[in-house]
Length: 153
Image (cartoon, rainbow, N blue to C red; front, side, top):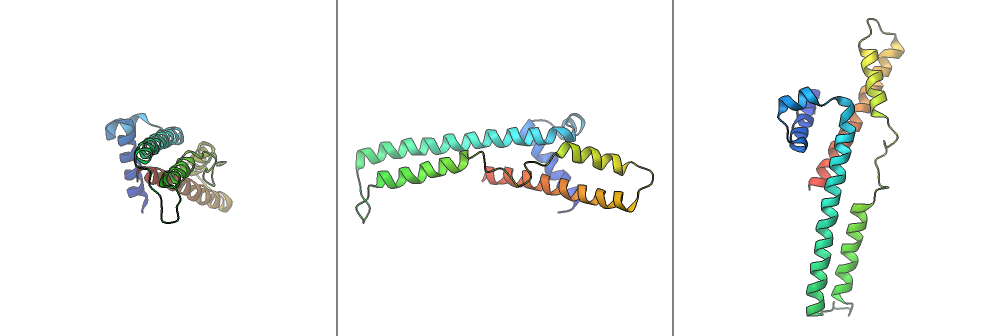
C-alpha cells in the first residue's frame, strides 16, 4: 500500500467513524487526535462485540435449559457452549492484550518527524532518524487500522 492509498484509507475510516464529510475530516481533525479517535472507536466496537456475545450466551442458556441435550461423551451441551461463549467474551474484553507499540508515543514521534522534515539542511543521522520515525509511524498506523479491521469482522 503506497502513502496516498494509505492516507485515503485513513480519511475514509475517519469519515465513517466521525460521521463527517471528507472535507470536514481534512480540515478539522489533526494528526495528534488520531490515536485518541481510533482508541475510542476500538473500545466502542469491543463493547458492542462483548454485548453481542453476552446476548448469544443468554439465548443459548435459555434454549439449552429447555432442551437439555448431551454430547456423545455425555457432557452437557449447555456446559460446552457456555464455556466457549464465556471464553470468547473474555478474549474480546481482555484489555491487557495491547499491541507491541503501546509505549510508542505517536505524538512525540510525529512532532519530531515534522521538525526534522522542515529543517533546511539535514545531517546523515537526521535523515536516518526521519526514515526511522516514518517507519514507526507507518507501523503504528497500520497496527491501528488492523485492529479496526479485526473488530469489524
